[in-house]
Length: 338
Image (cartoon, rainbow, N blue to C red; front, side, top):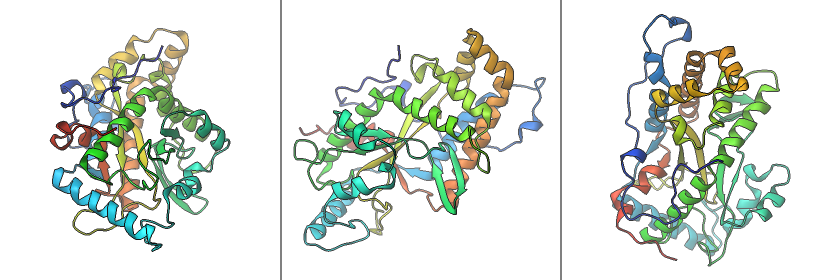
């Protein structure tokens, strides 16, 4: 039975404790896997979490209460000019729902059936069949953390008919959506991990550039054996794009609430211990094929390449770290609105 790593059915007023705290940004020295041997020390164990922490530090940032108010004012202004029929870079049509349905990540088979089956205000869908990779396919540059969570319900019972971004209304309304988003994400942790593994499997079935190492697929497949991600030293991290404080620049291209979500390694030591504890023949076979060290080093290179892909695509400091926002003082003492 898969047990969600965090139970957030009721939004806490206080920050998570240290077990769910923020990863520390650490230097991420890049070394080729060939430089390591089984006879050396186990510094490689910490490489995955170092590279993931570096990625979080490079592509995302945290916002304080003043910045939240600035961003919500920009969101409110965008809705105002949208309702007046003025098309801007942030509001390409006058309402969010048509954009939502036309967004690239909705163009997957049976998406309408999937949406109808989801009773929550949110839905989680695959971003593309190449999670954790970056490159060029069919002359299209891409980077992918994995699945997206999107708002699918546009009405006053949820978050309003004109919701194009998390940062709209006021801080209380931002917290309301944020808390329900994080709760939805945590309750769908298994589904998100499954989508990542299925995307990796599709990638492995193809040929050409940007292929994910088979050892990384094996690593995530083995993580599926855990009761939850926390048990194997991993967690989910969610980001969103919005306006840019100070410049009013729009950092998102699809004007509907959508949230990039990825698995990251929080503790290499805990992940290693979990892998060593697996005893089924299938798990032992995967570990024998690749070795834990190979999985860790290939994952580190994959995470590093993904970070470089985001930087090459101009995404440095373009995402708000929603997990950092969720436990921030700005959210701590704000009551969500119903």
